[in-house]
Image (tube, one colour):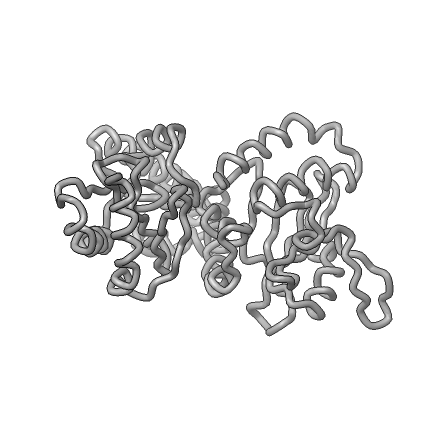
Length: 361
């Protein structure tokens, strides 16, 4: 599932059709159901996977319905409440999610208007939905940093434990990013005072505060411009820092083109190189060592035979606290397995050798 491409497709659809969508039901049909099927990969027409208008009586509340319940392994895992596109998503709109979250096995709930998706879990108290989302996705302003987390909820790579364990960090990072953005555009008094007190030796009067408000905004703007210019210079020189996203599909021509365009944003870590040498040591008896190569991308660290993206040995997903190794089957479909350390790669020695040998034929 190429999640990012499908999200971009939905984004274009929203731009084209949102103006003619007048009801909540139309929002579900036009935007939310495609999100469930195309992005998350669940069959919206299979009641064993997706139950629309899910009913679960709670106390004195009888016959209330949640818009969608997503099942995995026969148990409800995700609840989705929908509003009409364009409507604001306030916590007061999530009253049914709060009630249903408490009485089902769901660990994830989603409040959406078809464009914005807010993801909740139970970080603050067990089995009680948090009031603040740990993740937000706006299809008209896609933050590619959230793609790895969205992929964990997909049918093919469902990993609710991993996303819940990372939810606390995601929640606070999201809030900090918003604060930074706000301070850069409209810095508050404490923010201005922080810098003024460190560069100005005199008494900070009201006039000085007003001066430093302007200076702080100007300095922040110039700093951001400097960062962009530095990134461009680094791109020209072939070096820059990495921004890593998850992909769960086999490489294709379009992906290769995207990777080439983003090659300037890639950093290869020592941990990835060490992982490469471990894999190489495992399969070197099956193929000549010089045929074993790697390509580092924004999405993963790929280990290949003959530097050929159609001959993947495995992928290392080391861009998070939980490490994963991606193993390929005979159809070159990837399955990610969590590992606790680099040494765990040796647990996959047999299948790595088998993968290398199949390309020999």
